[in-house]
Length: 441
Image 1 (cartoon, one colour):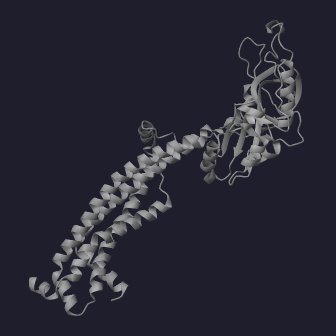
Image 2: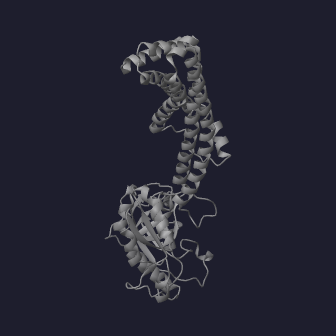
Image 3: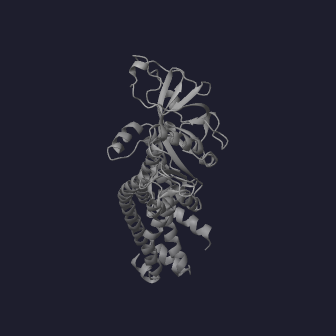
């Protein structure tokens, strides 16, 4: 008996017992739908966490910090020192796209009568180009830029008039204005408001190279410039303050901060862990994402377990259906054996019937779960978001996510459950004595 003959016979047998077959299929449908929905909500939680973390910062970026030394011999012996040498070693790690040291100063930027305070960071322009930042206006920095700055997306919105007694909306086009940079926090204020013994800081005339696109990370709130120029400004600022300038020479230069960019997110957790193990102080949104993923996985396991119980009950229903089918069809089985039917074909017939019940229930269950998933993401989105938020479900744009692989896996698993549930009744039918079958009938 070929496969098509078996399939035709199995379909006819299932249609002969429509009610029982339908109830078994509904059991699988409910179980499959429950599992897919529960898992999809877990995937939705993970997607929500990722969206929430991306709003905190760039998932591709690792910030490195070091606060333990002044660049002398003792600090060079300490673990986690950020220097040109160690940064060169980090840049060679598999998965690392770019690394740049960072030096920063809190400074004032003036544009006519308007000013703003901001963090000015010195970076390596050639490396910074590899960080995949885009500009909403202008261009990125180049190695040839000297007193040229790159504005974060939000900084141009912060300008205000320090001489105004009330709030005055600033209309500053940093790309066209003549700008100045200084460490003098009293710059732009009325002379009467400035202390008489204040420090006289240098004032630098600067130009804007461009404005970065909004990225929801630290870059939105900073101003960048060539690290070589920033080093000069830092030394001149320290000199104005009559501070001792650290002997941060080219030979033993160390930094308090660095940026590591990883293009492929598959490497981010591995590199972040390696840096921590090597003694570096790091900060990355991936730290929060990992903790949130663990929470999502735990919730997903609980939800998946609840759905799995329904599928187990459905498997018992299939087993019951097939056992009853064997008892009711003893004469049919006996006749098949008497006329010389292959014993394996008899077992295949019952296994195929059970598999068809599982496959039909799986397909219908997945279809129903897709419809419910769509409703969760549209009609019931607000209500479900509030409920998930109460258990730390993040602030994503979806409640349920059903990947293609889950659809295929659910149908395959439901079919397997059907075949597995029908194995014992099929074996019983194959081993049944032909004479006993006809005699009992």
